[in-house]
Length: 505
Image 1 (cartoon, rainbow, N blue to C red):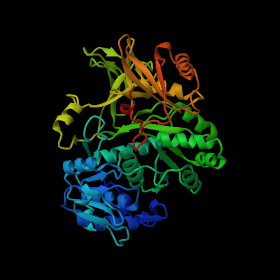
Image 2: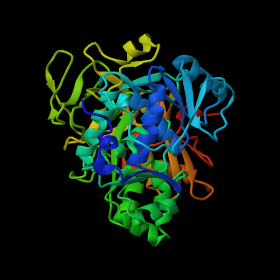
Image 3: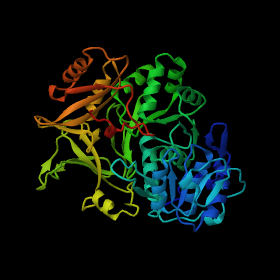
Image 4: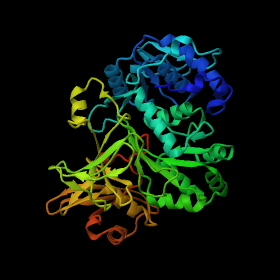
């Protein structure tokens, strides 16, 4: 495997901008010097934790750890002390890397600390230029822990390289691209895709610090070519477009708009495309797999789908009884499914739901210190069970319908994905936000429950109107039986709705 960041040691890119956070920036030569100097101090130290604020210091710290071959453990600065204590105890880092001005909370402040400097000069030290084993750990990223304490997914160097190179193929991503985003740097989306991605290509990233429509318009108006965001960010952009012609013009200049971490409602897709002439590309991945699929820039615009598997990724949809409903080879070509007896199957009707399982170089290697959880996550023949449910459309596109644990509703003998009902609700002009869950029902098994944030305070009869709207838009058996009205939906730092927090009184 070649170096993760060839541009760091290439004289042709030395003066090119690499990172910009607010009014602070580093060229490739400055990044190489600062990260290289820190890497020399980290060699042989074992795992290191990184206090992952949206800053130059975080980017330099992670690049330094990767240069030194030392696994980095990003810490979410918004995590509570109990969660931070668990992550530190579980990962046992040798030290913590942080910005000189960062105040670290109790559990973090007890560890040895190195303040990250970003003003070094000189070449990358020779000792950190050596090639490293592609299977060696690069990052340990902790999952959200919705069903227990967070687990540390060990991500190898090969997974980072293969994912970023596959995305370069799907998105025609080059060193000429300038990426803008305001994503946090303690997770896959903002850190691996949003920082390491541009650096692997030899391009540059401009981080907004705090996301805003004004910041997006400014950066795209000043030469940025790509925007990464999550659905809540694109929703805010869609809302602002109605009254902001300059924002529409800036988004229209972008070469690529990418949404991820959750499904972008079809209604927001349509509003953005109508106002800007640009489509938003969706992709699908998770902590343990990095990226699995994407809509290609040279492919057909299909709002509501996450495209086809990326190069090198095998993917299949599997029924509860083990039947393979649909599958794709490592070149992304659709292949037929097989039932439990090996007979050919293949319903590509956009309705038959199966669990996504993947296999390929993009996968993590294990959950740190959790051999039981690692074994349970994989099938006997090496497929990773994602827990995400999807259908395959007739053209081969994958469409996510939700999580197996929270978004697959079994009602009246049907398997129903919450996502399509949420999209239908969001098409109604009275709905600002929507989430759908299943609740136990003696007659149906589960009944469909909608949680809606209305544009205006809900008037009499709106619940029935929304239920009838879904029945007309989709099918009668997919109508919500209960509609709750809220002022907001609970979300995590990545904008994902926390459905486990939505409970009937």
